Length: 208
Ligand SMILES: [Fe+2]
Ligand SMILES: [Fe+2]
Figure (cartoon, protein in one colour):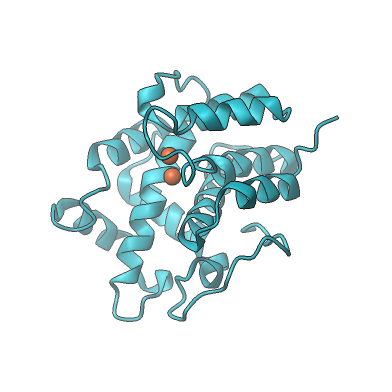
């Protein structure tokens, strides 16, 4: 039986991803996915964890394989080789629109909604005077979205599509993502301080 635990996912992420920023992104998107699972009515703890793992692993191959030709495709191959369930592999593939993998399950829709917005929320938090996500109102996220010069690499259309597909108004989705980051803000470097290092061990606890 392949090990598909959260600890195994963390170890796979760390094997391929050495930069702190990308490890933080993985944990931030995991937190958003767990919140989106609950929002979608998932109550089973193991299922909430599976949604989280899609977030934790969605970019695990990106540092090594950043081009559209490779990113996610290589990751999906590696996941399959190592026995990760196909449901998770496809959901991870679905976060990149160019794969054309249909987002035909709530989990696949959620990863699209979680990914870009989680990155955007963290960028928006870091320009608050306190550099705390706790001090970021969801309204300010929407304002930043309209500011074309802010975080211009983040595609607004994809964020909107994500919100549409999960059926949440952008303000509500932004509030959900912000709330999901709060319990792990120190780990994400979003609590005003330098933030925690994220070594290979110990495995950081998930957002509740
Ligand atoms: Fe990606
Ligand atoms: Fe991502």
